Image (cartoon, rainbow, N blue to C red; front, side, top):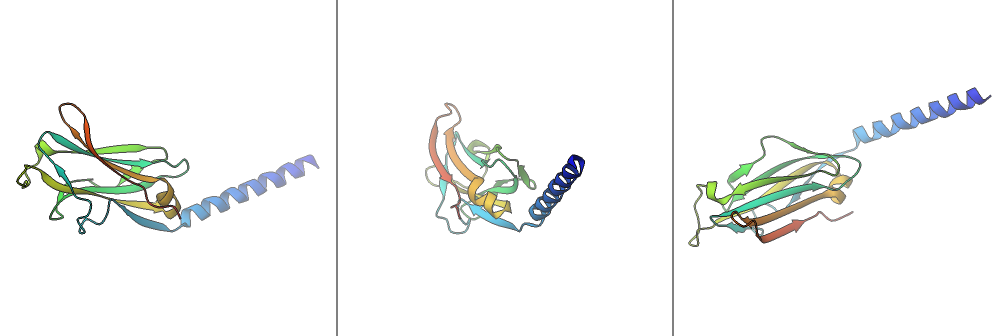
Length: 158
């Protein structure tokens, strides 16, 4: 009798696990854009000589990862730097990507700054992106490391 109950419980557990894995595998994938549309210009920042812009992408979730593609774009929408293919963001992981103002040969404004914006596209399950996908853009001084500007974005929860 005990053996039959154990086998029944084990088979039920296996069936439940297979059902959950199947559901997770076919869950719809969605895209999310953080730090605005690169063509609207409303999130532009200026990067001077001696400064670096750091884009940090955070997956604060505990269950699943997602994939991101990132770009730094100039005021004309041209890439200044970008990911070379999808970047996997595992649960609890944070990754940073730098744009060194001294290394850029782009046109500068009358104050010597390069106008730029950051764009990140995330792919994964909508719930994970809505709750766990966070973006931070900071500008810091190369010599002192002092942060001079910060923009934080986290998509709204459902």
